[in-house]
Length: 254
Image (cartoon, rainbow, N blue to C red):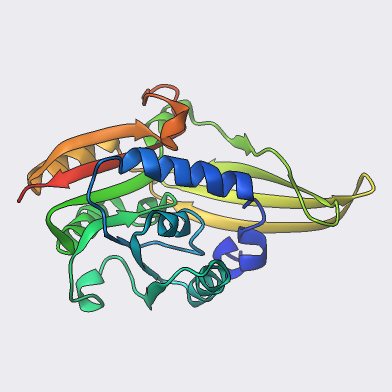
């Protein structure tokens, strides 16, 4: 089954100016009062969660495994007049692709869960190696502790409407496998005149990661002032039982 990352035309369908404004507000709150001049997103995708940072005067860098995602990110950045340095890289091998440090190194879009729990600590080490002394490490993830506990199978999104009036619906069906991993089946339907005229289905394979594993690793790496918040932060305080998505910002000691 194909990955949605192979279809940038589908991947960005739920983007909108309203979502961009919400993302910008998130970054303004997260980095309030912090001297963030440069940021590297090691799972930048098409840049939906990262490009709004350019409006805050942050120099942007990004990496991703997918050529098509990076190409689309470049196109979006050019359309917005945002300068960005993009490189194809596996976030398990960042130090082979970057030879400088950044005020903030981040992983957006729930991407850490694509690798096993045994590999995630290595990814955090790779990210940490590129964080400037006194800088920050950031990531956002689904609340996997909640997902594993509830064993929910169906997740629906609010519809999106294309410029021509077509309606796009997205439903996810989650298959919980015996090894603890979860396959997300993404089902898109396209409606016109109250009739479905197109269907698309994709699969994404995730490895639920306990929040404690991540926070313990950050502590081991020497990070301080580790903040856990709902994502986006406008959604309020983080609650392990109810928050669907969260973010972590950690300060690296000088």
